[in-house]
Image (tube, rainbow, N blue to C red; front, side, top):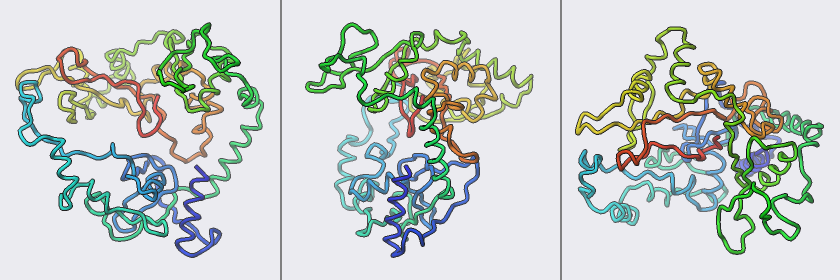
Length: 403
Protein backbone atom coordinates (compact mmCIF):
# COMPACT_ATOMS: atom_id res chain seq x y z
CA UNK A 1 0.00 0.00 0.00
CA UNK A 2 2.84 2.40 0.86
CA UNK A 3 4.42 1.81 -2.54
CA UNK A 4 1.10 2.47 -4.27
CA UNK A 5 0.62 5.71 -2.35
CA UNK A 6 4.16 6.93 -3.05
CA UNK A 7 3.67 6.28 -6.78
CA UNK A 8 0.48 8.36 -6.70
CA UNK A 9 2.28 11.16 -4.86
CA UNK A 10 5.13 11.05 -7.40
CA UNK A 11 2.57 11.37 -10.21
CA UNK A 12 0.88 14.30 -8.45
CA UNK A 13 4.24 16.06 -8.02
CA UNK A 14 4.91 15.67 -11.74
CA UNK A 15 1.48 17.09 -12.58
CA UNK A 16 2.06 20.10 -10.31
CA UNK A 17 5.65 20.57 -11.51
CA UNK A 18 7.24 20.32 -8.06
CA UNK A 19 9.48 17.83 -6.29
CA UNK A 20 8.08 15.26 -3.87
CA UNK A 21 9.96 16.94 -1.00
CA UNK A 22 8.31 20.27 -1.77
CA UNK A 23 4.80 18.87 -2.01
CA UNK A 24 2.70 18.49 1.10
CA UNK A 25 -0.66 16.79 0.77
CA UNK A 26 -3.75 18.24 2.37
CA UNK A 27 -4.79 16.12 5.34
CA UNK A 28 -8.56 15.93 5.58
CA UNK A 29 -10.36 16.08 8.89
CA UNK A 30 -11.82 12.71 9.75
CA UNK A 31 -13.23 11.65 13.11
CA UNK A 32 -11.99 8.47 14.82
CA UNK A 33 -15.32 6.73 14.15
CA UNK A 34 -15.81 8.14 10.64
CA UNK A 35 -15.25 5.96 7.59
CA UNK A 36 -14.79 7.36 4.06
CA UNK A 37 -15.82 5.35 1.01
CA UNK A 38 -14.93 5.59 -2.65
CA UNK A 39 -17.90 7.10 -4.50
CA UNK A 40 -17.25 4.75 -7.41
CA UNK A 41 -16.57 1.25 -6.03
CA UNK A 42 -17.86 1.85 -2.45
CA UNK A 43 -14.62 0.47 -0.98
CA UNK A 44 -13.48 1.88 2.34
CA UNK A 45 -10.64 4.38 1.85
CA UNK A 46 -7.71 3.90 4.20
CA UNK A 47 -5.52 6.94 3.50
CA UNK A 48 -4.49 8.41 0.12
CA UNK A 49 -7.32 9.20 -2.28
CA UNK A 50 -8.43 11.83 -4.77
CA UNK A 51 -11.20 14.26 -3.95
CA UNK A 52 -13.08 17.10 -5.69
CA UNK A 53 -12.77 20.50 -4.05
CA UNK A 54 -16.28 21.48 -5.19
CA UNK A 55 -18.58 18.47 -4.75
CA UNK A 56 -16.45 16.34 -2.37
CA UNK A 57 -16.47 13.36 -4.75
CA UNK A 58 -13.92 10.80 -3.43
CA UNK A 59 -12.10 8.24 -5.58
CA UNK A 60 -9.79 5.49 -4.30
CA UNK A 61 -6.37 4.86 -5.84
CA UNK A 62 -7.42 1.55 -7.40
CA UNK A 63 -10.23 3.24 -9.35
CA UNK A 64 -7.75 5.94 -10.41
CA UNK A 65 -5.40 3.30 -11.75
CA UNK A 66 -8.20 1.52 -13.62
CA UNK A 67 -9.40 4.77 -15.19
CA UNK A 68 -5.87 5.55 -16.44
CA UNK A 69 -5.77 2.12 -18.08
CA UNK A 70 -8.99 2.91 -19.94
CA UNK A 71 -10.97 0.42 -17.88
CA UNK A 72 -14.30 0.97 -16.12
CA UNK A 73 -13.34 1.96 -12.57
CA UNK A 74 -14.89 -0.27 -9.96
CA UNK A 75 -15.77 -2.94 -12.53
CA UNK A 76 -18.87 -3.30 -14.70
CA UNK A 77 -20.67 -5.18 -11.96
CA UNK A 78 -21.14 -1.98 -9.95
CA UNK A 79 -23.44 -0.51 -12.60
CA UNK A 80 -27.04 -0.21 -11.45
CA UNK A 81 -29.88 -1.02 -13.82
CA UNK A 82 -33.03 1.03 -13.27
CA UNK A 83 -35.60 -0.95 -11.31
CA UNK A 84 -38.66 -1.97 -13.31
CA UNK A 85 -41.80 -2.22 -11.19
CA UNK A 86 -43.73 -5.23 -12.49
CA UNK A 87 -46.39 -5.17 -9.80
CA UNK A 88 -47.30 -7.47 -6.92
CA UNK A 89 -48.44 -10.27 -9.22
CA UNK A 90 -44.88 -10.62 -10.49
CA UNK A 91 -43.38 -10.47 -7.01
CA UNK A 92 -45.64 -13.23 -5.73
CA UNK A 93 -45.15 -15.51 -8.70
CA UNK A 94 -48.39 -14.95 -10.64
CA UNK A 95 -46.94 -13.08 -13.61
CA UNK A 96 -43.43 -13.73 -14.92
CA UNK A 97 -43.65 -11.40 -17.94
CA UNK A 98 -42.39 -7.83 -18.03
CA UNK A 99 -44.87 -5.03 -18.66
CA UNK A 100 -42.41 -3.21 -20.88
CA UNK A 101 -39.80 -4.20 -23.42
CA UNK A 102 -37.26 -6.93 -22.94
CA UNK A 103 -34.82 -5.87 -20.20
CA UNK A 104 -31.70 -6.89 -22.10
CA UNK A 105 -32.84 -5.15 -25.30
CA UNK A 106 -33.77 -2.06 -23.30
CA UNK A 107 -30.37 -1.93 -21.62
CA UNK A 108 -28.53 -2.46 -24.91
CA UNK A 109 -30.56 0.28 -26.58
CA UNK A 110 -29.68 2.75 -23.81
CA UNK A 111 -25.98 1.86 -23.98
CA UNK A 112 -25.80 2.10 -27.78
CA UNK A 113 -27.74 5.34 -27.96
CA UNK A 114 -25.46 8.41 -27.90
CA UNK A 115 -28.25 10.42 -26.27
CA UNK A 116 -29.48 7.75 -23.91
CA UNK A 117 -28.10 9.56 -20.88
CA UNK A 118 -27.24 6.32 -19.11
CA UNK A 119 -24.38 5.93 -16.67
CA UNK A 120 -22.70 3.53 -19.08
CA UNK A 121 -22.63 6.28 -21.75
CA UNK A 122 -21.17 8.69 -19.23
CA UNK A 123 -18.37 6.24 -18.50
CA UNK A 124 -17.25 6.49 -22.13
CA UNK A 125 -16.89 10.25 -21.69
CA UNK A 126 -15.00 9.97 -18.36
CA UNK A 127 -11.30 9.37 -18.83
CA UNK A 128 -8.00 10.35 -17.28
CA UNK A 129 -6.09 13.38 -18.50
CA UNK A 130 -3.02 12.93 -20.67
CA UNK A 131 -0.78 13.81 -17.70
CA UNK A 132 -2.43 11.20 -15.48
CA UNK A 133 -4.72 13.58 -13.62
CA UNK A 134 -8.28 12.52 -12.89
CA UNK A 135 -11.18 14.90 -13.63
CA UNK A 136 -14.27 14.87 -11.48
CA UNK A 137 -16.85 12.63 -13.19
CA UNK A 138 -19.95 14.12 -14.85
CA UNK A 139 -23.13 14.79 -12.90
CA UNK A 140 -24.74 11.60 -14.24
CA UNK A 141 -22.18 9.65 -12.24
CA UNK A 142 -22.44 11.62 -9.00
CA UNK A 143 -19.70 14.19 -9.62
CA UNK A 144 -19.78 17.74 -10.91
CA UNK A 145 -17.28 17.58 -13.79
CA UNK A 146 -16.00 20.98 -12.75
CA UNK A 147 -12.37 20.34 -11.80
CA UNK A 148 -9.63 17.76 -11.44
CA UNK A 149 -9.52 15.61 -8.31
CA UNK A 150 -6.84 16.60 -5.80
CA UNK A 151 -4.67 14.03 -4.05
CA UNK A 152 -5.36 14.07 -0.30
CA UNK A 153 -4.44 12.00 2.72
CA UNK A 154 -6.20 11.06 5.94
CA UNK A 155 -3.16 10.57 8.20
CA UNK A 156 0.31 12.14 8.59
CA UNK A 157 2.83 10.60 6.22
CA UNK A 158 5.13 9.71 9.13
CA UNK A 159 2.50 7.16 10.17
CA UNK A 160 3.60 4.91 7.31
CA UNK A 161 7.21 4.99 8.50
CA UNK A 162 6.08 4.09 12.04
CA UNK A 163 3.96 1.24 10.72
CA UNK A 164 6.86 0.00 8.59
CA UNK A 165 9.14 0.05 11.64
CA UNK A 166 6.64 -1.97 13.69
CA UNK A 167 6.27 -4.45 10.85
CA UNK A 168 10.04 -4.88 10.61
CA UNK A 169 10.14 -5.52 14.34
CA UNK A 170 7.59 -8.32 13.93
CA UNK A 171 9.61 -9.81 11.06
CA UNK A 172 12.72 -9.87 13.27
CA UNK A 173 10.85 -11.42 16.20
CA UNK A 174 11.15 -15.04 17.28
CA UNK A 175 7.48 -15.79 16.70
CA UNK A 176 7.76 -14.74 13.06
CA UNK A 177 10.86 -16.90 12.56
CA UNK A 178 9.09 -19.91 14.04
CA UNK A 179 5.91 -19.45 12.00
CA UNK A 180 7.23 -18.75 8.50
CA UNK A 181 8.21 -21.11 5.77
CA UNK A 182 11.07 -21.13 3.32
CA UNK A 183 10.31 -21.04 -0.39
CA UNK A 184 12.27 -24.26 -0.67
CA UNK A 185 9.86 -26.07 1.65
CA UNK A 186 7.76 -28.79 0.02
CA UNK A 187 3.98 -28.44 0.36
CA UNK A 188 2.65 -31.62 2.03
CA UNK A 189 -0.25 -31.72 -0.44
CA UNK A 190 2.09 -32.74 -3.27
CA UNK A 191 4.78 -35.33 -3.74
CA UNK A 192 8.24 -34.52 -5.13
CA UNK A 193 6.98 -34.81 -8.70
CA UNK A 194 4.32 -32.16 -8.07
CA UNK A 195 1.42 -34.62 -8.14
CA UNK A 196 -1.37 -34.33 -5.57
CA UNK A 197 -1.04 -37.02 -2.94
CA UNK A 198 -3.92 -39.43 -2.55
CA UNK A 199 -3.00 -40.58 0.95
CA UNK A 200 -3.93 -37.36 2.75
CA UNK A 201 -7.47 -36.27 3.60
CA UNK A 202 -6.84 -32.51 3.78
CA UNK A 203 -7.01 -31.98 0.02
CA UNK A 204 -10.27 -31.44 -1.84
CA UNK A 205 -10.72 -31.20 -5.59
CA UNK A 206 -12.37 -27.90 -6.49
CA UNK A 207 -11.85 -27.67 -10.26
CA UNK A 208 -10.92 -29.79 -13.26
CA UNK A 209 -8.83 -27.47 -15.41
CA UNK A 210 -6.39 -29.20 -17.70
CA UNK A 211 -2.80 -28.13 -17.38
CA UNK A 212 -3.49 -26.36 -14.07
CA UNK A 213 -1.68 -27.05 -10.80
CA UNK A 214 -4.26 -25.41 -8.54
CA UNK A 215 -7.34 -27.58 -8.97
CA UNK A 216 -7.19 -28.63 -5.31
CA UNK A 217 -7.83 -26.76 -2.08
CA UNK A 218 -6.22 -27.26 1.30
CA UNK A 219 -9.08 -28.30 3.62
CA UNK A 220 -7.84 -29.20 7.11
CA UNK A 221 -10.01 -30.16 10.08
CA UNK A 222 -10.00 -27.61 12.90
CA UNK A 223 -9.77 -30.20 15.68
CA UNK A 224 -6.70 -31.79 14.10
CA UNK A 225 -4.57 -28.68 13.55
CA UNK A 226 -1.04 -28.73 14.94
CA UNK A 227 1.98 -26.45 14.98
CA UNK A 228 3.19 -27.63 11.57
CA UNK A 229 -0.16 -26.82 9.99
CA UNK A 230 0.44 -23.08 10.33
CA UNK A 231 3.41 -23.30 7.98
CA UNK A 232 1.35 -25.48 5.63
CA UNK A 233 -1.40 -22.84 5.72
CA UNK A 234 1.10 -20.11 4.84
CA UNK A 235 2.21 -22.01 1.74
CA UNK A 236 -1.31 -21.78 0.32
CA UNK A 237 -2.13 -18.33 1.75
CA UNK A 238 1.01 -16.82 0.21
CA UNK A 239 -0.26 -17.90 -3.22
CA UNK A 240 -3.66 -16.29 -2.63
CA UNK A 241 -5.45 -19.63 -2.43
CA UNK A 242 -8.55 -20.04 -0.24
CA UNK A 243 -8.31 -22.47 2.67
CA UNK A 244 -11.46 -24.28 3.82
CA UNK A 245 -11.43 -25.43 7.46
CA UNK A 246 -14.12 -27.79 8.70
CA UNK A 247 -15.47 -28.80 12.13
CA UNK A 248 -14.64 -25.42 13.65
CA UNK A 249 -17.60 -25.54 16.03
CA UNK A 250 -16.32 -28.75 17.62
CA UNK A 251 -13.54 -26.77 19.27
CA UNK A 252 -15.97 -24.36 20.99
CA UNK A 253 -17.90 -24.54 24.24
CA UNK A 254 -21.18 -25.22 22.45
CA UNK A 255 -22.82 -21.84 22.98
CA UNK A 256 -25.96 -21.65 20.86
CA UNK A 257 -26.09 -19.19 17.96
CA UNK A 258 -29.81 -19.65 17.43
CA UNK A 259 -31.39 -16.24 16.75
CA UNK A 260 -33.77 -16.43 19.70
CA UNK A 261 -30.88 -17.32 22.02
CA UNK A 262 -28.95 -14.28 20.77
CA UNK A 263 -32.01 -12.11 21.23
CA UNK A 264 -32.50 -13.37 24.79
CA UNK A 265 -28.83 -12.74 25.59
CA UNK A 266 -29.14 -9.22 24.25
CA UNK A 267 -32.15 -8.48 26.44
CA UNK A 268 -30.43 -9.94 29.50
CA UNK A 269 -27.41 -7.76 28.81
CA UNK A 270 -29.68 -4.72 28.75
CA UNK A 271 -30.82 -5.67 32.30
CA UNK A 272 -34.46 -5.16 31.58
CA UNK A 273 -34.04 -1.86 29.79
CA UNK A 274 -36.16 -1.41 26.69
CA UNK A 275 -33.80 0.80 24.70
CA UNK A 276 -32.63 -1.99 22.38
CA UNK A 277 -36.18 -3.06 21.60
CA UNK A 278 -36.93 0.44 20.24
CA UNK A 279 -34.01 0.46 17.83
CA UNK A 280 -34.92 0.46 14.14
CA UNK A 281 -32.92 -1.89 11.93
CA UNK A 282 -32.73 -2.23 8.16
CA UNK A 283 -34.19 -5.50 6.92
CA UNK A 284 -34.30 -6.94 3.41
CA UNK A 285 -37.44 -8.51 1.94
CA UNK A 286 -36.01 -11.48 0.06
CA UNK A 287 -38.94 -11.66 -2.38
CA UNK A 288 -38.34 -8.28 -4.00
CA UNK A 289 -34.95 -7.36 -2.42
CA UNK A 290 -36.31 -4.07 -1.15
CA UNK A 291 -35.06 -2.67 2.16
CA UNK A 292 -37.35 -1.56 4.92
CA UNK A 293 -37.19 -0.41 8.53
CA UNK A 294 -38.41 -2.48 11.46
CA UNK A 295 -38.08 -2.45 15.24
CA UNK A 296 -35.55 -5.04 16.32
CA UNK A 297 -38.09 -6.51 18.75
CA UNK A 298 -40.65 -6.86 15.93
CA UNK A 299 -38.10 -8.64 13.75
CA UNK A 300 -37.42 -11.30 16.38
CA UNK A 301 -41.11 -11.70 17.16
CA UNK A 302 -41.63 -12.32 13.45
CA UNK A 303 -38.81 -14.86 13.45
CA UNK A 304 -40.62 -16.81 16.15
CA UNK A 305 -44.26 -16.31 15.15
CA UNK A 306 -44.01 -15.47 11.45
CA UNK A 307 -44.98 -12.36 9.46
CA UNK A 308 -46.97 -12.00 6.26
CA UNK A 309 -47.48 -9.46 3.49
CA UNK A 310 -50.79 -7.61 3.57
CA UNK A 311 -51.64 -8.85 0.09
CA UNK A 312 -51.89 -11.68 -0.87
CA UNK A 313 -50.86 -12.84 2.63
CA UNK A 314 -47.66 -14.55 1.55
CA UNK A 315 -45.14 -15.18 4.36
CA UNK A 316 -42.48 -12.52 4.61
CA UNK A 317 -38.91 -13.70 4.17
CA UNK A 318 -36.92 -11.04 5.97
CA UNK A 319 -33.16 -10.87 6.43
CA UNK A 320 -31.32 -8.88 9.08
CA UNK A 321 -27.81 -8.04 7.85
CA UNK A 322 -24.73 -7.21 9.90
CA UNK A 323 -26.43 -7.33 13.29
CA UNK A 324 -25.38 -6.23 15.78
CA UNK A 325 -22.80 -3.84 14.30
CA UNK A 326 -19.29 -5.19 14.78
CA UNK A 327 -18.34 -2.05 16.69
CA UNK A 328 -20.79 -3.03 19.44
CA UNK A 329 -20.87 -6.82 19.04
CA UNK A 330 -18.55 -7.51 21.99
CA UNK A 331 -20.50 -5.12 24.21
CA UNK A 332 -23.96 -6.38 23.33
CA UNK A 333 -23.12 -10.08 23.02
CA UNK A 334 -19.81 -10.58 24.87
CA UNK A 335 -20.11 -14.36 25.24
CA UNK A 336 -20.90 -14.87 21.57
CA UNK A 337 -18.08 -12.55 20.52
CA UNK A 338 -15.59 -14.41 22.74
CA UNK A 339 -16.86 -17.74 21.38
CA UNK A 340 -16.40 -16.55 17.82
CA UNK A 341 -12.83 -15.33 18.34
CA UNK A 342 -11.83 -18.49 20.23
CA UNK A 343 -13.07 -20.62 17.32
CA UNK A 344 -10.99 -18.82 14.69
CA UNK A 345 -8.39 -21.18 13.22
CA UNK A 346 -4.82 -19.96 12.80
CA UNK A 347 -5.31 -17.11 15.32
CA UNK A 348 -1.85 -15.77 14.47
CA UNK A 349 -3.53 -14.35 11.35
CA UNK A 350 -7.23 -14.27 12.19
CA UNK A 351 -7.44 -12.95 15.75
CA UNK A 352 -8.67 -9.35 15.27
CA UNK A 353 -7.32 -8.19 18.64
CA UNK A 354 -3.97 -9.82 19.27
CA UNK A 355 -2.99 -11.87 16.21
CA UNK A 356 0.78 -11.24 15.87
CA UNK A 357 0.62 -11.66 12.08
CA UNK A 358 -2.64 -9.73 11.64
CA UNK A 359 -1.67 -6.38 10.10
CA UNK A 360 -4.77 -4.61 11.43
CA UNK A 361 -3.58 -5.26 14.99
CA UNK A 362 -0.42 -3.28 14.24
CA UNK A 363 -2.21 -0.13 13.10
CA UNK A 364 -1.40 2.90 15.28
CA UNK A 365 -3.79 4.09 17.96
CA UNK A 366 -6.43 6.49 16.67
CA UNK A 367 -6.58 4.89 13.23
CA UNK A 368 -9.93 3.38 12.32
CA UNK A 369 -9.30 -0.28 11.64
CA UNK A 370 -11.02 -2.33 8.92
CA UNK A 371 -14.34 -3.88 9.89
CA UNK A 372 -13.17 -7.39 10.84
CA UNK A 373 -16.46 -8.61 12.25
CA UNK A 374 -17.92 -10.75 13.56
CA UNK A 375 -21.10 -10.26 11.56
CA UNK A 376 -24.33 -12.20 11.71
CA UNK A 377 -27.02 -12.57 9.06
CA UNK A 378 -30.37 -13.70 10.48
CA UNK A 379 -33.18 -14.70 8.11
CA UNK A 380 -36.62 -16.25 8.31
CA UNK A 381 -36.38 -18.98 5.69
CA UNK A 382 -34.94 -20.14 2.39
CA UNK A 383 -36.09 -20.34 -1.23
CA UNK A 384 -37.29 -23.97 -1.12
CA UNK A 385 -40.03 -22.99 1.32
CA UNK A 386 -41.86 -20.68 -1.09
CA UNK A 387 -40.34 -21.61 -4.43
CA UNK A 388 -38.87 -18.13 -4.89
CA UNK A 389 -36.76 -15.65 -2.99
CA UNK A 390 -33.57 -16.64 -1.20
CA UNK A 391 -32.74 -15.41 2.28
CA UNK A 392 -29.60 -17.52 2.72
CA UNK A 393 -26.32 -15.62 2.71
CA UNK A 394 -23.49 -17.91 1.71
CA UNK A 395 -19.77 -17.55 2.36
CA UNK A 396 -18.72 -14.49 0.43
CA UNK A 397 -16.38 -11.54 0.07
CA UNK A 398 -17.59 -7.99 0.58
CA UNK A 399 -15.69 -4.95 -0.67
CA UNK A 400 -13.09 -6.10 1.85
CA UNK A 401 -12.29 -9.56 3.14
CA UNK A 402 -15.03 -10.93 5.38
CA UNK A 403 -15.07 -13.91 7.66
